[in-house]
Length: 132
Length: 132
DNA sequence: CAGAATCCTGCCTGATACTG
DNA sequence: CAGTATCAGGCAGGATTCTG
Image 1 (cartoon, each protein chain N blue to C red):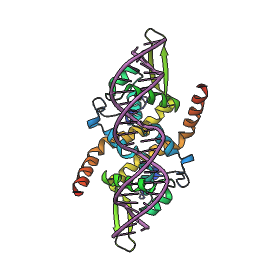
Image 2 (cartoon, rainbow over the protein chains, first blue to last red; image 1 turned 135 degrees about the horizontal axis):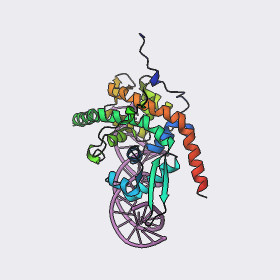
Image 3 (cartoon, each protein chain N blue to C red; image 1 turned 60 degrees about the vertical axis):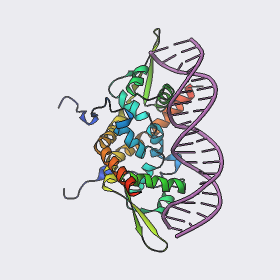
Image 4 (cartoon, rainbow over the protein chains, first blue to last red; image 1 turned 30 degrees about the vertical axis):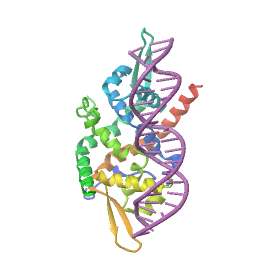
């Protein structure tokens, strides 16, 4: 094959899709574009976690934000919530099949992040230097 | 091969990486987690665009947000800015090599978005219904 | 045409206290 | 343990006006 195959970069029907009403990109960004969602999803990829475990794994999340983000993810169908009727109650959060399917593109993005976040920091420093 | 190969889901050294100071995921989310960055990058993947073109392509972005997001992306090294000294001036924005390298994981995410945003909407509706 | 400068607002987020 | 409720602050983002 002499012509490089870039079909993996094809984006379906981009035009018109940008209107806020029916833009998949915006939909997904509403799900995982916030400060905590990807960290939670990434944590749950290993195994189900309980509320307190998640708190300890993500050091600086407030309890309010953890509660709220978990419910948003549940609403979007990405995670599910399972209550064990013990005393005191124990609640477990898991990725749904939909949430697991998100792991593939999300992991690709994390790998990119891991490879290039240093390049980004360098770019920032150099940009800020020129600004002086 | 009888054992399914999930190595593409491997995430390097997740523990400790969540501390805000040195977390690549947070770094990248700071770049593209906002409302407009991915739309701009996706637009520039086709070809360089001028300021006004970008405005028309992304219908509801304000001029202030376009200016600001473009500069942030430039600061992060994802796009570059080229001025033609004409009257009136014409300014063109392009993806840098770093920005282009982001296209691969980003496009994977967009494909996922395209495939599943309907599932997300259904999940939301059903969640909201149960809440009544 | 491609911005800069201001003003203003919502809501995202954190901190704190309370509950089953 | 796993939440809710309430209060308060800051910043993202929009609308408008002005410039080289």
